[in-house]
View 1 (cartoon, rainbow, N blue to C red):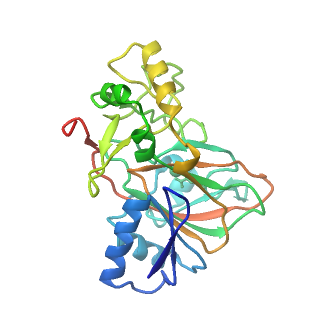
View 2 (cartoon, helix red, strand yellow):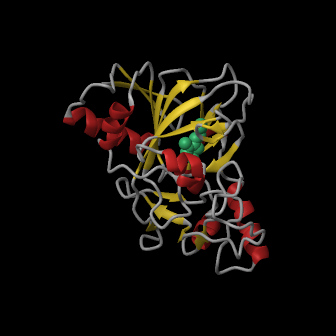
Length: 289
Ligand code: OGA
Ligand code: MN
């Protein structure tokens, strides 16, 4: 198995591997190490049906049910396979066939608003627009590393509440009410600095900016601290942007990277098939501080 870095501090492209075929144990352990070190892996030229996408994803952990915020209620009712969903702007019979539309998705990691955020996610490109819809990834280990020491000491003992009521494109999830006050927003509370369970390296866990709140601070202080922390996110050295081709498979480590998607022409067609790996409660880094 051969791999090449995609950017200085993040990403690796894996060559010469057909993900539709069974992988050897040594390939799987090499991939796991590369995935947790580099944050995101890319495999090009793949051709996978849903079963093959699930079998590949399962090599890295138990599958999670599709994130329900990404599906409309009709889609949820029609889901035959709860483990593979579509991310798509395509509308059929008046209904979108997948989540997120053609909108920009703000920087986020998946499911941080739940007690056990996903370990990782896999996207397989079936149809891609000629331009737009690029997906960027950034290292949250990198963002933590560059914080001034004083700020590191301050945040390592703090927690953050992650808003569950909105999707990464900013829309209200079914079943939630608008709550413009971050203090009132529903969602899981996690340490702001977490240790990766495999590498034991610290990373910032910011989830997403919208309606996030540091519960031990006043709203004003929480907003100021979060704005300051976000100013260290997505520096060029930590960041890589994927321009999709049909047959690309991307797998990211949700514990150490965040992702962002550009908007694209709503008239163009984009279709990704997606799986997600079941997570665990994040590990606070303050025990090690
Ligand atoms: C996701 C996601 C971005 C994209 O699947 O979690 O944020 O590029 N997708 O579609
Ligand atoms: Mn996402």
